[in-house]
Structures are given as structure tokens and as C-alpha cells.
Amino acid sequence: MIKKEQMKIVSSRAIAKDTYEMVLENHFISEKAVPGQFLHIQIGTHTLRRPISIANCNKERNEITILFKINGVGTSELATYQAGEFLDVLGPLGNGFKAEDEPQSTILLVGGGIGVPPLYYLGKTLKEKGINIVSILGFQQKENVFYEQQFQGLGETIIVTDNGSYGYKGYVTDVLDQVGLFDCYYSCGPIPMLKALTTKLEGKRGFISLEERMGCGVGACFACVLPTKDGTGYRKICKDGPVFHAEEVTI
Picture (cartoon, rainbow, N blue to C red):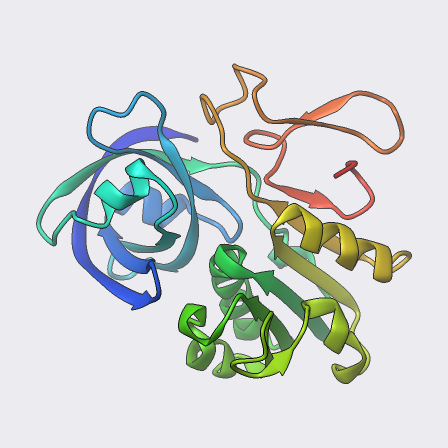
């Protein structure tokens, strides 16, 4: 069930270079949200809403945490919002990770940049079910790294930066041989990263969450479609996703 809600800003703070963490309060959305879903946020008078992944959920406090990176006029304006103000939000949207269906003992999380946030809520949910979590998080450079301690609280965490200014130098796919055996992987990040990862892990059970600019956010405008690998049609990222089986769509 999707609703248009007013969400009160509890807090907003910068946590890395051009990256903000915002905690929002709303009973309905916090009660319904599952890992992998997103919010569609109206910012000022901008025509299109901004899709932002849910990074955490505290159902007891009716709170949703989102993380976003300033990459345009809309997110720049969002970063100026203060505690006590309200956001016009559609949510929770999309099909999330099927965390409740995972009987495996070890799960690998692979995130890149602003694709990292939705994996935290997933990892936290899986850990509560007694599943072992291993994470690989990729960032451009040291100044962009965030949530390292939070992921370390879930299990083994490997940080990779493009320029080697923090953690390992290279890409997330360069350190896959360091994580040992795992039963399934979940990943979210830029398309090139997801392509490289799914290619390297071909044949391994996995799920990917796609970042994409959207129009309506509810599957009506066909602005965010991807072809299926089996040639049977197309999938809408906003409605059929943003989470897909790694072998389901062509990216």
C-alpha cells in the first residue's frame, strides 16, 4: 500500500563529502517499509519528485533514515531543510529485498557510493535473523566514505576507494576473493559496477537494486524500463523493482 504522507524531519546532518543523513518521522511509512524500498520526495517547486532509498527504519520510533548525495539543484535544496520541517512524500515505493526468504548462512552485500544506504537496512534485518553478513563498500575517495562503523556492526566489512586514499585501491570486484564463501549476494550501485559484478559472479545467486531517475515512481510513465534477459518484455524499475534477480534484466 502506497500513500502520500507528510514526514517530519527529526534531524539532518552531513556525514561525508556532499552526503547527508536525514531522519524522518511518520507512522504509516515506517510501519510498512521493507529493505530495498524507496521514498519519492517532493522538493520545493521542482516538477519531479526525487527517489531516495530507505537506509534504515526504526518502527518503534516511527522513523525512517535516508541518505542522499548532493548531485543537482533538487538535492542541494533538500540539504538545506532543517529539523522540524515537513516533506511531502510518496511511499514506501517499489519491491524490496526478499530478506525473509533467505535461509542461507552467509550473505554478501556489495554497495557502491550512494548505492550503499539500502544495503544497511537489509543487512540489519538479515543479522537479526541470525545470518552472517559480509560487506564490500566502494567509494570514490576517503572523503566520500560513510557508514563504515554501522556496517562493521553487522559483520566483516571491506572498504575500497577508486584512488586508494582509504582501504583498498580499486573496485569492489577487485576484492571478491577476500571474502571467502557466501551463499547469495545483494548489490546496489552504479550500472557499470553492477555490470562488472554480475559478470564476475555469473552463475551465483544474487539480487541487484538499480539506481535510476524516475518520473512518476509508480509505474505509470514508463520512464525507467529495462528489457528482460529472456526477451519476454520489459520491467519498470520503480514498480517491478528496484530490486531484481541478477539474471532477470539486462543492464
